[in-house]
Length: 447
Image 1 (cartoon, one colour):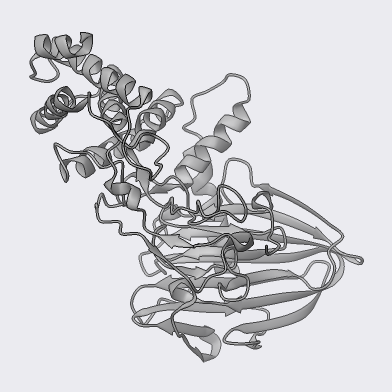
Image 2 (image 1 turned 135 degrees about the vertical axis):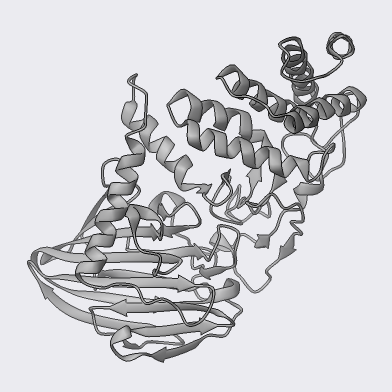
């Protein structure tokens, strides 16, 4: 079994389109572009040799580390201690729409600022991209003062660094510079799906990008309406949900990663970069309860759009755009986290019958209505149709909540959630929100 960095060693940054995992040593070991469910560009968390990474850190032995998110944000700050220095690294992933920024900007941008607070230290930058889960060949060329252009197919990353970079081992770039107290350097990555790529700002422009990103997150956090116990923990949880939101559609992914195992060395390594309907009701309720109605409404809209595509049958999960084809395949060339194989992309659980999802979807609609939301006629018809499906199907066996792949059985939770679907539909029909046979639904509920 291979040694591996504990999952708790990683922090996450994101821009509501994708996310990156940053290790305690300043290495981005996971990043998929341009979406959560796109192929990885950096994937060292799944294979330290073939996956690729993007690291900024003091060279040599680290004596200590503290890290935090800037208050009310998903901007990460780490402070390293070496034998002769204290060095601070600030990481932000910035969306083009944040802070009223101009449109001429990379579709995705990561800004990394390194500052020496005390003493002096050699700061090392390593840029080692391995796109396509480590299977795509790259073309890397220098573009003068514009930095380096790394391209594969039509996609490209521009890397600009105030620490001079040159050829590293393999296909990447490496640079080292001795910095003293008060020195500050930026390393910036910009990604676009089409070459030529937009060049990201460096220097003061990069500093403004971090400030804009922090301000955008703080403005969003200001919408929190919760003054009970553990307020800071509630806010951090809300920020995590927001970070996992795919802004163009409103979907919320279960995780930004694939194939992190349920048990080290095991084979239950699944791709969770999709949106599960089972989470819908709890997510909607949580967002509504703490004041984020816009996100809750966007998620509900996504959910209703996605379920229309398979109506009257529901899948248990969809991709961020509501698409249904999530064919699962194995990546045999990757070693897996801690040697846990196989590494999988896609998720065949999408084809399972899990009847509890009907209860979760209808309950989410019911919660929305209870908080003052209104259903249009088409949505009302769709929800009523789900009730007819539940009435026909609730006695059937299914695969159940745990998504085991051992065939269908009868599951108590599935029956309970079918009851929830029927109960909520009776209430919606009685209140006039949907046109449905309330008496027939009531009989099925009491059967």
